[in-house]
Length: 181
Image 1 (spheres, rainbow, N blue to C red):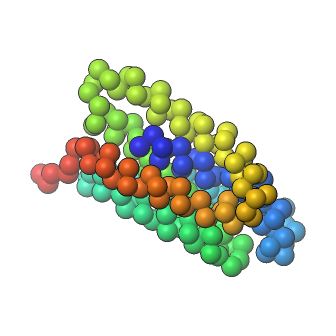
Image 2 (spheres, rainbow, N blue to C red):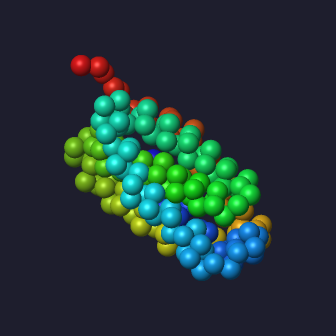
């Protein structure tokens, strides 16, 4: 789960270095549009937990993690294959909403999975990953954009979270299952 926590905030700033390439590809010079493309994912991070948290308490975190991770992977592919700046903005917002699930439910998952004596030791790792993502994302985005183009930064990076997908399913199976009342 810690690797999924790194991928979510990592995806937000990775598009910042190649934003000039994005704007050239869409034949736009709008400063507002370029700022919106970079920052709309953070708005998704802010609104996503409002949607994610209630179902996780009703149906269980495992189900919500799995569905939201699948939707996030699909949206990253849509960002890779889009054909307009408007589509990129919408897909980035939705990807931000869906990828906020590990951040919103991570603390509860740690307390479900870990014994109470160990949760204090694992919380620093939980906090470190979302903090490390925005620091490393622009650096990786700059190198990726030079080597492979902006579309790799926008959406093709879905392959990296896809590698964590099987790990996520296996590790979250230990979470407390949902039992109807």
